Length: 419
Image (cartoon, rainbow, N blue to C red; front, side, top):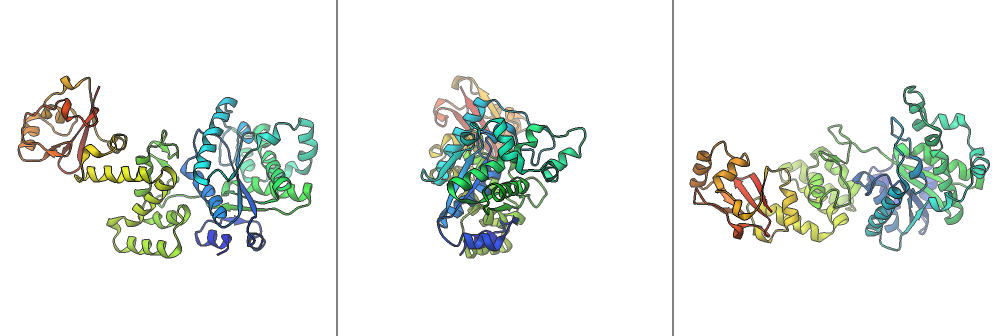
């Protein structure tokens, strides 16, 4: 299947400058395309995964993707989708972000994928060269008609600085540079990038007398109307230090039934038949969440590896009262219980009896209720049913020497950390 047909059945094409020509061009292996990522954060997030995985789809189809780091454009700030001026970042922060994002790209694509930084060819250009060699090819009238600019100019209280107004020219310069140096004919990006990308195709036509193409992906929102990629804690990042693998997995496994098929098409490499089977499973037995679990596993393996998925599944079993809680990965288990009530105790010697712990965690209304729940077999310490209504935990009960897990009933958990 031609890669353009592949993107089409997945619903990934929102706009394309000349679909027939693009399809014909990419019918021959070895074609070059690119997508840019500005280093506005120390990690990519799952919203970046749509264009990133599209590049990977092109690579698997035999083409040569270029991942562009916005060392120059990141110093300026893209006005697209923003209702006010960005805060300019310190250069050292930008360079640090680039190094981290480059590592994430390498992990996904392998070391043989070309990763470039637009600062390398932008920094040597003087202001005079910029205005004469590039600015001359753009009219202010044309630039003001672009959505990213027009939306800001129409808001008198906000406006747009000359700095952000120039962003479009810098991105167009990137396309021209990659066209001349690598015969790169296609730039891809989100739908909000259409104006910036087509400015690049125009510059290639005017300055290099060449033909280049633009392709954008649809804006992804959830069925409830929420912005995709946001959790209660904010953006869902690829960096495990910012979003734990457990949280990452849970974001996908909690996908709405109305969204899950679209997400499988956008984010996984599963084929049409397999996605169709998961769609039927969702319609016939939505309570089993088969499609969501497959989506979560596919994405977590891709970003964090199979070992992390194994830890997550083991912790999930533990939370449902299955498996050996002492063998569960401690970091994953603590992440799984992050939303549970928690209590910190200075040392094992300070651990009070279980009824006091249950009360302090808010799992019972009184010590009397706690003792009654224990006597009736409804309280578990580290997944083991308690019988003694006044049992006081000791250092030997601590999981990994760090914490205790209390459970009242089937799903009411509490975490006690020690030290």
